[in-house]
Length: 230
Length: 285
Image 1 (cartoon, rainbow over the protein chains, first blue to last red):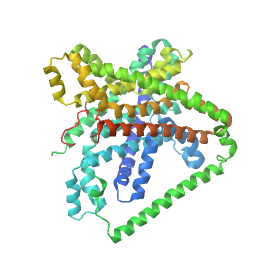
Image 2 (cartoon, chains in turn green, purple):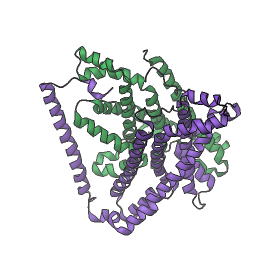
Image 3 (tube, rainbow over the protein chains, first blue to last red):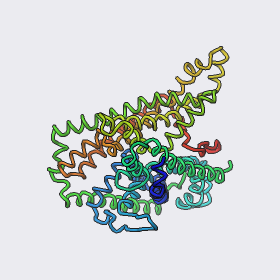
Image 4 (cartoon, rainbow over the protein chains, first blue to last red):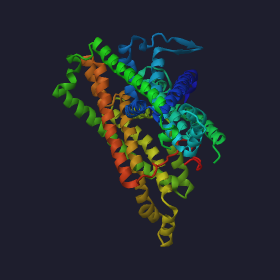
């Protein structure tokens, strides 16, 4: 335990990166996922099929491979995708090109799960709602924006929360690609303080558990407040 | 709600508009594909020497046997152990005794809330990073603990999904608690669980790729050796990605088949997530 307590600033900073990855990728994946879900249930058949293919491919690819794509392949396709233009420092946090690549990979991966969660939410909205919305003359965009999606979002709070919790845990994959977030910090602590391995592990596990539990507490509050009375 | 109730049957104007959307989409997608291959060609990624390793029989054999087979072996070990782990702790969570219920709950929640990679690194160091096969077993054990915990939750949901009359009837003919669980509840629960177990296989298989962080054998390791020798990262990524997608699609197909065969058109098992947002309201079916 001493190792972690002595380097508590490093510990906190590592989790700072984890949380930063989670928040940025979480918000972006919600936006992209919503757009994908709209395409997935929309009236244009080619868009439906294209998103279906996208979702199937990203859901069945290991996250590591998607990260590798953005480290090796994407810069080759388009030189701006090496994210060299991302060099932001806020306080003592440096958001490097690696960070940007990690955010993009996590966003693309998570958004397809968000899409599926929202689609299940759309399926949970009673048919009458959409029929009534059409009966008063709303077009597809109006049906979705004003009637179905607001209810679908509420119904999909639990699955969306699961998806975002998975994202919290998936930020650890960024360790493989050179970001000093919690998992990679644990590995370097393990190298430096081999004898305190178990305590170090427990300390980092608790960090993740605190983040996950805080998030799921918030999600369950939201779920209760937003529950649709039927 | 099927997609079609969301919009009216398109009239002539809408059809024309949709046609425009379709054409635009097709053009954009085609342009993206063409651009993709053009850029690869530009960087010489489509030349034979970059792909040589993936068409030479000797290399293909190494990739399939030392790579894919090892990966599948890790995933298979992990799933078999995870099913056993899930049974023990899932039944433990359902136990009437607090001394069995609480530890099971703690173990399951703990391993579901931490990243697999964190667990993998810890086990790898605990086994000794230089020890024989330590990376292999680190991957297997980490995946076992994580997927086992998820399966424990699946098992619990499966047992709870068995109609109550089943256990009541079993008790009424004088069966003991263990008999009710072993002879009545579990066989029916397993049937409902099968698709969920297969879906978990997909998760386990995908997560074997994390083994690259602990230098575990398997597809990612072998292909890394290949691209270090041939400097062909891009073909390597495409090949590994396709192999994973292929195997996963086969597994998903199997899950759908089993679902149709054993569960019917009923909804897939609803497994609550970590934490207390777990209880899904009954009002939203």
